[in-house]
Image 1 (cartoon, rainbow, N blue to C red):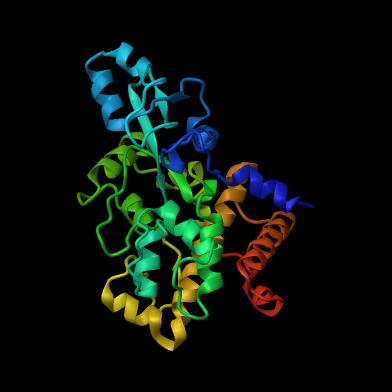
Image 2 (cartoon, rainbow, N blue to C red):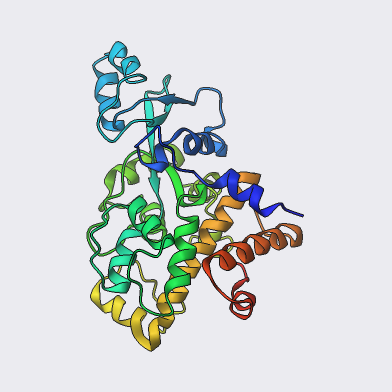
Length: 312
């Protein structure tokens, strides 16, 4: 049986006093990306580059290799400890991105504008009890905060996914962009990246990136994160969606948050164990043990936990 605390230590990208870059571009996160099936080949490597992926690409295009090397030691403000996943022979560099942001969901669902701004500050503010949260939502946000910097909430990518101000910075909108990559639309850099590397074989991309649990079996139909009455997915937190989430003492907001947590945990398990395909009883039981531990840490009682341990 799984050693849950040992598993958590493996998949959690922890904080460090020696770096100030985003968690998704730290060495431990990049090492996870290197384990994805598509990037296991020898010509992909993790390099220390303490600046943006765009700056790396500019320097590479200018053949300024000495300056690239120099960023192993020097760093741009906010990039200390940053790494990239690169394929030098193909001239490709990837950074990392968070799948589902905690910042806008916190602000929108709670209707609170905190003085804290970034995801790290919001995460630790929730865990320390420093942020205002409506009664009954506390354990749901705490569970999300606990798993926020796990490897299952991160992915390698060509660049950041700019989702606007309505909280579309989540795996749902990103999966929608990916499966519609052959069409023109926003986030064109993502669409081009998917097309150039996977073409029309999007099922292979889903497998390569451990996104199996985000889709209905053997299809490109994105799973619904909540039981929305008309069957539509909620991709953003615009007012009409928020009104629905906040009804009945935040009933659907709770489901919305806990299913994000489940996706992160399940994907972290898949990545750490290089597990693909259908869930077998042994693996499912291990994931349920992780659910129980995280939900208990978040403050749910035994009865609540027993109702929530099914897989997403």
